Amino acid sequence: MSKLSHLDETGRARMVDVSGKAETVREAVAEGFVRMAPETLRLAISGAGRKGDVRAVAEIAGVMAAKKTSELIPMCHPLPISQAEVRIEPAEDGLAVTARVKTTGRTGVEMEALTAVSVACLTLYDMLKAAEKTMVIEAVKLVSKSGGKSGDWRA
Image (tube, rainbow, N blue to C red; front, side, top):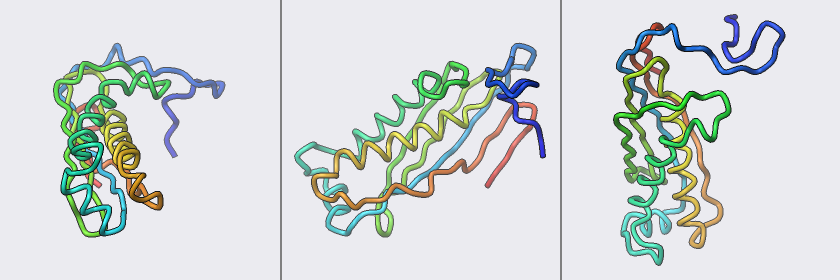
């Protein structure tokens, strides 16, 4: 098993020093799913809810969250994000959420993509909870990452 990079030799949490790493183009894609009843899905797709187009609002919330990741996750580096895109599409039994985040930097944007998906899912829940409280947020995961010393990875 590899050593955890966010712990020092004594086991204390630390921010990883990335100053010696090369700046490269890095990209990460994450996804998640909000499972809901057919009636709730129809309401979400219609854009006619009392709160407006819930998908558009959740996509914007996801982009905003990607930019705030280092403020939410203690050991994340603040990154100059060059692109953050969140897409929410209807699927069987709910809404599929995908985030793609890109930067040129010394560390990857996996956490930014995962944060974008998570907050977009939470926003969907918040905006639709009046219609259904039994929705389930699930399957939040990293799908791929590229760039950096460790190279490309795909689930």
